[in-house]
Image (cartoon, rainbow, N blue to C red; front, top):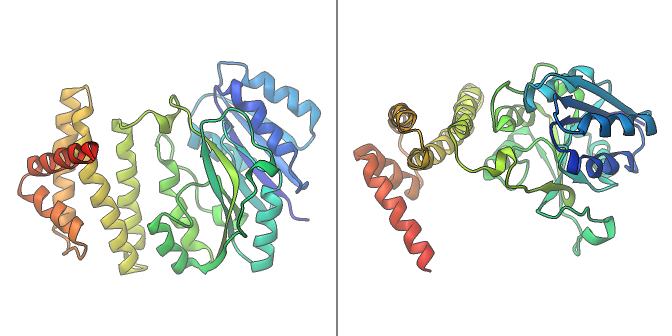
Length: 327
């Protein structure tokens, strides 16, 4: 039985941490190590981790100064000894059979990555397995790296999140999470997918993503949100010498998100920062627009409007929002 190293970054989630750890130690797949990386928590997380470490010898606790999510995950990667790697966020939880299912899929199909579906929930009470059983037989797909990369851009299969997957260890040989970035998954998941020979995915919902308003991802648009554009730009450059079509899809992803972000910059309270980022983003967007023609009608219209005058796009966006609200 191959060992799975489950890496859990922990920071000020005392209220939810026990729920997460319980779902890990109760896994039906037993050959696991649970690496809890306490990233300088100022609440009672350290004590919760220590109490569970005494209960289960498979738990490894690492205490470090606060460095952010990427830093904590990287420390966990360096400490991992398993042939397979997985990530769980400490305010989320998983079905007790998640890693049994993912390992079985990985071995059956000789896949470098296996993934399951997930459920977003505001519930603070964990579901039991019987409560979340799918009514329909799960759909399972097996793809090579190019096929999976195309599906990744569609954001339906092989999505950018790292926590609903099981990875063969060698994929992380040269890959680490970017320090100081939000949307950190966007910087690496496409690389892991492309470097895999085979991937498998099931529609079974085995991971439970806890939605809370005060989380990093629940706070809405901010200047840090622009980190995602940097990830999309890196993605385009990554695929440039590998696949012209995937490179184009990355550029399209950048344009769609950057034009929307340009509009959302008006919500930033810091006017000086807003103007500074608006100017740079405008220059970057126009440079991307000039690279090639766009086949999709909506993106073409958005690009033409933006290039003529960004204000036109802002008016178009606002009008569209008002019409949607009236409907």
